[in-house]
Length: 225
Image (cartoon, rainbow, N blue to C red; front, side, top):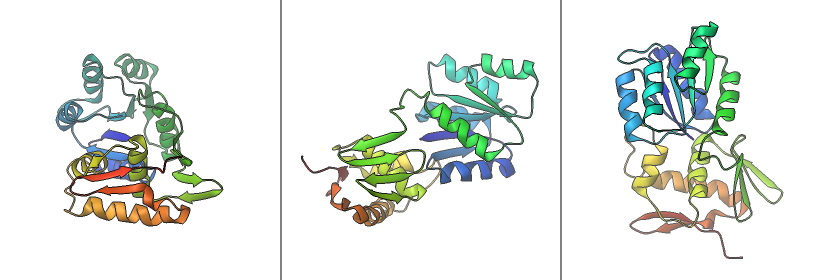
């Protein structure tokens, strides 16, 4: 899941970014409302997390603007404000949930999982292609009785491939989907990640499912049954 995280305090943003990334999400983390507004117009997010107080434009204003533009992805507001009136203001602005600081990471992840189920793109807690099943909560992939726990990077790539089975995905499409905003991947970065994922999938006998389309990109192509 691609997440926009907007928090101006780097000491708070960085651990939030790290825990969300370790859980398999692609996270664009920024520290001001102006950059956040620009990214909201450039990328499609499945979840947005806004701090209330931000330089440039506050989280409530961002929330209102996002909803007025017709977007329906879930929004989580983070804030030290904990009165009922504050919560009502945030929810009335279009937020789906509200988390009071200091943030408990386990609670944050539980709320993210719950909000993911409200996303228009939600297809369930697992993906299946052929006899391959990927659990989105545990980052485990299973085929028959064999289960593998994937790293966050391998999970992100396999999830993307499984959401687009039998489609040719270009190097640029993969970079746009899996690299965070502002990152500059090396020229062989996609190839290296594909190679690493194939090595893991070899353990369950499906490394050949990822086909190389020379000069273009890759395709997840399970064998015909």
